[in-house]
Figure 1 (cartoon, rainbow over the protein chains, first blue to last red):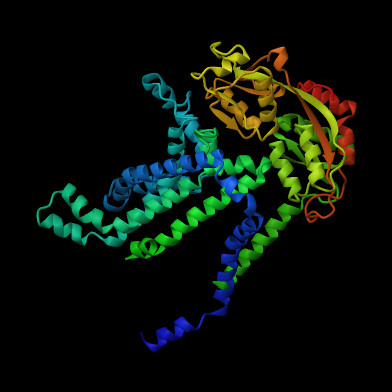
Figure 2: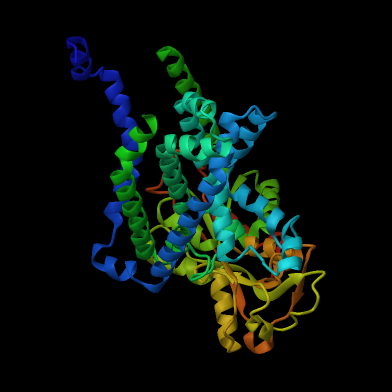
Length: 269
Length: 252
């Protein structure tokens, strides 16, 4: 390390530090305020109640399922966006990232219009298979996937662009088939990005609320996830709501903390 | 660059404060139950016409509104779908006036107008093959629904417990649910819904009550200087009662 670099590392521009502190405070203060309200004495009872156990299980199952579906569908999507010159890629990219900006409740309503019992696809689906997605755990997974998929796509697309195409071209020159190149060269080179995208997608699905309650409804033991349980108990049973919130904060924070290094720096490398 | 960011922040501050202040010398804020959505809009217009005081409405599930009021939300009147909720709030929070009962309502079974008749009584709520809804027990319409099921000695096979009555009514109207328990006035307000009466022994009356909320100790930078007393009194006037009756609400 040169002296100049050392000097830059030691001296922090004061303006930056002030704004950085404010930025951290905007996020930290509400979370600390939540901690202040935690009913520590009744916490174990609230956290182990049947409603909370059911909701935690549903949340874990549906968010993990959404992350898996996002990998299966999102990696090919990212590949199309990064590696092909298919026409309309700009439109496609805007389309698949739209759920990141769209109010989730709009996404939920749109899902109802498509997969509801009188929806474009939902009516056909019910008649041909008897499957009704709304108000079922499948509906929760679909709503979760709708909001989570964009996070995987943009992360993996970024990884593909950063990895470049030189090794893929080399493999192709040596006679590898396109499928072989994708499996043996492309996939390993973006593995960190896939991992990062999957974690982001999982985290988004774990906290999902608006699309779920609109599309999949709210029934304890079937479609009620942790965020829904928080919302429902916030009015009537505040201690339970705070206890659930604490569980969500701790679970999410621990996962983000333990994966941080492998995740961000891994994808950048 | 820095200067430009500063200018942008300044512009945001100006616009945001303009949005927040409203018409501060002659307006009141009313937090009202979602089942009052349509009628309260009409009531507010009538009150504005007669008093010259503007009414800002904050509509939502009564229980959610009660939480907002308890946490210091700046409102002048709280109109709830459940008189007990106001009474409970008054015990926990200072500055809440005496609840004034101003309307009644009752629960009915709502089905889509073109329903195939698979639901014609409350007993059908035990049918697992139907998609059925009620409100969550935490909101007033859910509390009333639980009472109705208990009175009729029915263990309902519900598919969703919605967090406010309007979203429940919307999902029945769209055909995504086969039926659900909502207020009579919600069915009256929606062309796509038809009402089926509850059996007499399971009938539940909803009693709506309004209370003033004292602004002292609350965020006074928003909204009004007027008190909510006049508005609560207005709710009992013949003008207001006529509007309520026209929308299907019963007398207090």
